[in-house]
Image (tube, rainbow, N blue to C red; front, top):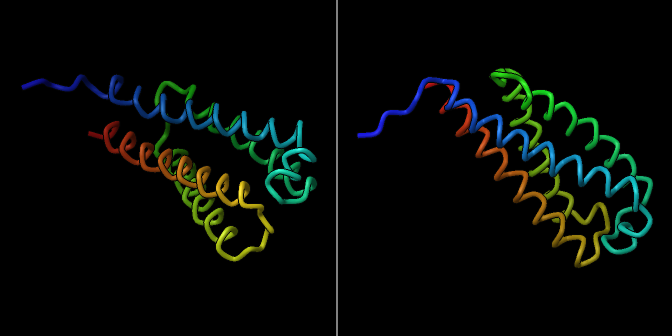
Length: 134
């Protein structure tokens, strides 16, 4: 039977998932800021909303990156990231279902795909948090 090394190795998985989340989130935020009018035409939402989301995502991604860079990602900070990722996932699905953001077909597909990715990050962060504690 293989033994799992002490928490430093276990915490590495959580930090890697947080770092990947930060990278994807930051890249998405940067794209929304840099190309809001073009993306808005393709996906449907207003360029102003996309710029606002882009700014939020850049700040959020930076905060998640700081958490990932710590030797041990704190459980409280990780729980906040998980909660916000769940809110983003559910909010994205709700925005598509309600039609509130007037997504194009491509935009609806993008919002659902993005929600799934963020949901997977939340799930992996839950797994990582559990691994780091045991």
